[in-house]
Image (cartoon, rainbow, N blue to C red; front, side, top):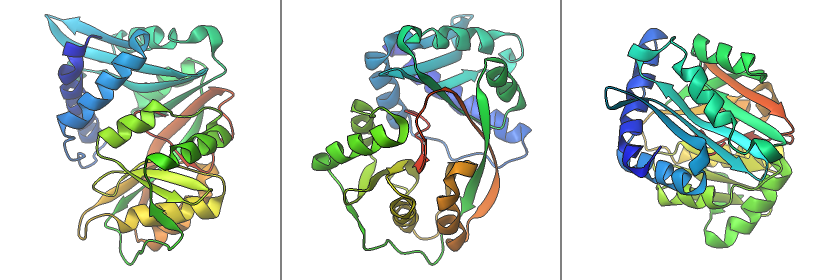
Length: 279
């Protein structure tokens, strides 16, 4: 993948996930602004050039895989194939290239998988263990930000690093800066946890040292959703039971939501809502 491919990969991802929503009889997600995607892809191309691959047909990008490596923790940031080119082996070939990134010093690996049966099969055959997920959807109602939560900033990045090390073994580092450049706010519970929250109140990333702090951060994120807007909270595995009370109290609806696949040592991975882009 080259920098000039970033917009084409964004457009491909939008088409692919819209097609998946239709096939799964789900309402399509709102289109994501290309500016946010360009921050993501340009950041990962700079930091993980060996993990970013595209497939072409007729001069057009029809597949992409983006993998990251953070101090031996590997993650799959994206794997998409144009609906017209699926089930022909291209996705497996792209995943194989992505898995080579950082293979020499790897201790663990993570994939956040959609509910696409074909993707689930590919990841399971690659030796990953699935942890099925719920997701929560709807318009938050009757939720207020707890007084323990405050706005964060650059001075809190040291806290984020410490929490990341406890939860997943390695820090996000510059990935957290990229989330902030893409518009995410930082919310903090002093000395106990943090969350990156989009301008729409959506949780981009949440990590804490204890369940109570994690639940307070999630409530604050739900309280930040503009009145009348819908949101969703993803990656609610059985390890994230602390998140159920906040989303149910906000009257969100629980649905099946794909799986978190892991291999090797990824740390306790709780309390934690991983980033779709940066794991």
